[in-house]
Image 1 (cartoon, helix red, strand yellow):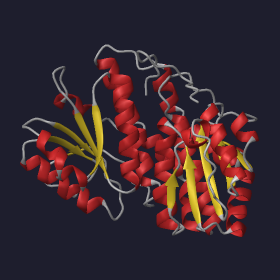
Image 2: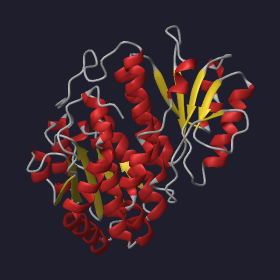
Image 3: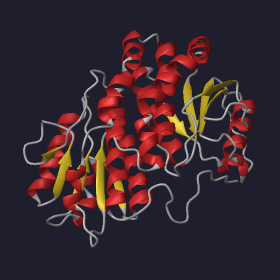
Length: 343
């Protein structure tokens, strides 16, 4: 991988960053998981914005599938703007922020703690206000990220959450899968998805990105990154929901990317992809199960919760390359900055 931009270099650092997290924050990851086990929360809430909220959405699926507890996202403005006090006894709250400084995220974490929740912060900034406001603060150890578009910090936030989940539920298979991630990520970031570029032109109105279950959270992140770096519109949908209202937009040549992981949702995503291909969509998919969609190279990890993370690593490589292909600088998207502190 040719490190021509900060974003490209940071994508290439994902394997190393993941290994650093799993080793450097191992003690806190295990202690947080053990605290959750002893606390036995009845439900989980999350607090985040942007890419961090997509990581939270990914963890929602992982927790619901593995721990069997419902997970709900709380809008940070509930505390920072409206001053509402939530009753969160017998729960745990996961707050995710790269900087750990956004006032609304910090205020909601403080409000959750005051409401009786066990609070857990995932940040890339040790000693940040969010870390101080939480019962457990996990440094995701992604290292400095100079590109505006978050890549390795998104991945490490998701991996940190999975590690806590593994310790919490005593899931040895998940913990073993996490240890193997750096080697898999090294392969995933090298997957070439530039074949998608042929379906995207300057007059393309939009790109649909599909997923289901944990891969739907990945689709949300991919759509955001496409808008940020490529100055083109992208919309994420569940592979089930796209067959309803959004189907009206699909015309011959309409570009669609279907992100399928090796889990129970893969057959349904492949079926939706073939259905869209029959309507003339220019569709690419990360599955061999589809018969009419173009298959992209993809990496299988052997675990349904780590597989989706390979998809975003490969997508990051594509979206950075496609931005440069369009003559854009993916490190400096217009109107955006690295840290946004909302209230």
